[in-house]
Each structure stands twice: as C-alpha cells, then as structure tokens.
Image 1 (cartoon, helix red, strand yellow):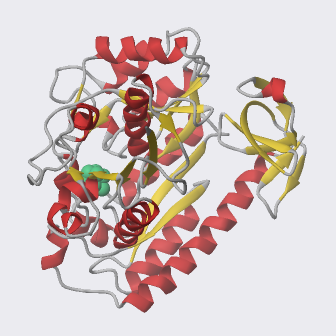
Image 2 (cartoon, rainbow, N blue to C red):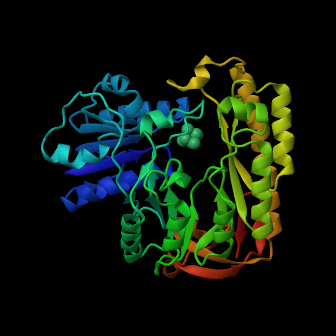
Length: 421
Ligand code: SF4
C-alpha cells in the first residue's frame, strides 16, 4: 500500500502529518510523492485564509484525479470548519476534523473509511513531531486557543487551549533528541498558553527543555506579545539553547484596529517588548505577523501602521491580507476595506518588510555565528540558518548536513538574502 500526503498551513500541521505518516510506515506503507499514484491520500488542511481553503480544494481534487479508486482522507482545520462542503467534493472518502484526525490510522486499518459524521469540538491533545523531512523538527507542544480574536477562525477549528504535562512533553523531547534532531521548533496555536489549564507554566517548560542533552537549539515558533513575559525574554537571552529569534504577532500598527481585532495589547506595550528584546539581545531576529485591510483600517490608520512599523527594530514581517472568515465576530463589523485597497496595502507593507530584512542582514555582516546546515541542495549549494535566522550558503558537503558550524558572515548576496561563506 502506498500513502501520499499534502500538508497546508502551519508548522503544527506538518508535525501532525509526520506523526500520522509514521504510524502508516510502521504498518508497512510506502510513502510516495503527492503527484504519484497512491492507495491512500491524506490532505491535512488549513482554514486560516480564503486562499488557503482554495489550495485545500485544489489538493483534494488533484488526489482524486490521480487515483479515483484511492481513499482520499481530508483532515484538519478546513475539514473541521467546512466538513459538509468537503464531503460534497466527488471522490472524498473520509473527512476527519481536528476532533478525530488522530484516529486516521485506526479507521483505515479497520476498513472504516466511509463515514459521514460531522466533526465535534476538538478536545483531545496529542504531542507530535515532524521527523526526517527537515533538519529542523517541529514539535507540537500545545493546541487550540481561547482568545477568539475577531478576525480568526482558528479557535473554531482547533478548539480551546490544551497541552500535555511538562513531564510528558519532556519525555517526548528526549525521544526527539534520541532521533538525532539538532534543532527543535516549539509549535502550537497559542504556544504561550501552555500550562494555562494545568497549573504549569510555559517558562517552566522552557527551563526543563533547556536541560535536555542532544538538542542543540530551540526556536519558539510564535508567541503572543502579552504572553511573552519579561522573565521569558530574560530567560531566552541567557539560556543555553534557545535561539535569539522571536516571532511576535503584531497584526496591526494602530490601537483602533487592535481594539477592533480584540487583541490583548496596544502598540505601546508591543514597542516596549521589542525594545526590551533588543536591549538584552541586540543581534536578535524579531519577526512580526501583520494583517492589512481589516475592518476599521482607514487610510489614516494604515499610514499610522506604516510609520509605527518603520519605527520599530523588527527584522521582517509576515504580511497577511485580511479575508473574511466564517464564524468570526468581524463579519458583524463596519468599516470594510475594498479588496483592491487591501492588496495595495499588502504591497506597501511587503516593501517595508523587504527594507527591514535587508537592513537586518546588513547589520549582521562580519558577525561570527553558528549555522545548522540543512539537507536540501540547489545548484550544488547547501543552506543553513544562524541562531538569529540569517540564511547562509556554501558549496554542498554531505558530511555537514545536520551539523552546527561556526562561520563568519562574509559576503552578502542581497538579491537572494543569503550570506556566502
Ligand atoms: S491568538 Fe488570536 S489570531 Fe492567534 S489563534 Fe488565537 S484567536 Fe487566532
């Protein structure tokens, strides 16, 4: 039997797909590429934007076209939030939302591949990690979110915040260390809420992870600004293994829009946090998610956001164009921004992000840094990242894959945003 998977969306999805695939491989399945003929296709879906949903539909149709006799299992966030729609796509044989996707292997093994029940609120939690497909391992330590930001459908797709205990999480981290992974990215939906309902804390988890031998480097994939406490910043600055790389969603650079979004901080709070990080870790990479075109973002609010972002020592932005999501509070708001204007603002923010990234790279020229070399080869070159997420390139050398090497950031190829060493 052959299995092929296609994963859309976040690092969490990649960790979960990898975990599922390992179950099938242990049972004797052969993994093939998604464009090849397989007996079982698994599409792990995303619902974060309308564009992501369109990509899900395309991937599902592609699987059905390749082998109309195959089992086509659609799992994850889009399957959770739009199960009825997914069931209507001809050729789909199994739809499992986030409530039951972890049962996929057992359902297939039992031949229980034709069911039409609609998903319920996801409540279970399963630690999982990706392996073998990347030098970096994505480690899912948390799921769900209680925040219900007004634009976001994820809490409806992923359920409330939940996690395992620190003891169980550390046990799986030791398993990851034993597998040879050198870099682990801690992933979750709202990672900083780890321990919120179990009486433990995210900082205590970080302290315990820092003591595990074998893993050389951790990254925190993303953490809400209000949950990134000054203690966590100080810990990262002085820890043995945590990279000086923080991804802190900003979402809007105007207090009026942040209020509309129901975010839990204002621009002043966010700016102070960024300044603290730069004070303790001057070379840190700080990335921010930023959404343009949300309800109530008039021209003046957008200009305010541009000036605000320009003023902060951010390294680069992940720019998102707002799109209406089902279930969300925003659908009842006023102040809709025309679609064309949303895209114009996206272009402006992307240009700001590019400038910031160039500046950040230029500031790092001549620095000595530790690079973890990855396995991908392009035109005879291999790539890696420093702890502050600077991309580095050198001629391919198989013995360096998954090896940390000390390098001096020499010549910057600013067209490709990469240092040659
Ligand atoms: S914090 Fe807000 S944006 Fe992030 S997953 Fe939760 S509701 Fe969505």
